[in-house]
Length: 75
Image (cartoon, rainbow, N blue to C red; front, side, top):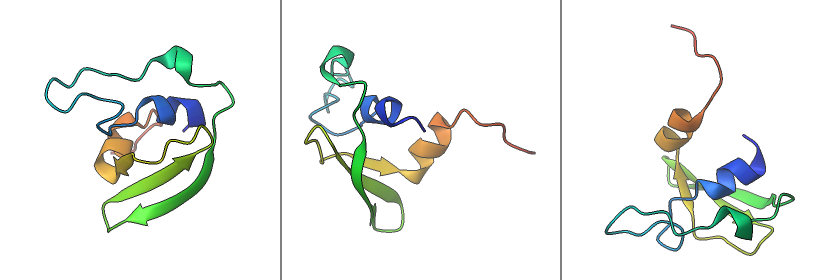
């Protein structure tokens, strides 16, 4: 995944309203050069990313990452 694409898809409560699902994160506030500084497992179901813009509260479930994948999948 391109780093900025993934950063803009952060599902945490700071980036997406928990009640309405409305995205709070404004794309213009995320630098084109944002990158992950560290990635670690969250249990057996997700990744946690520490981003270069200081954001670190997002948990990216594997199911979500698979759904975002734009690669070709074989049957």
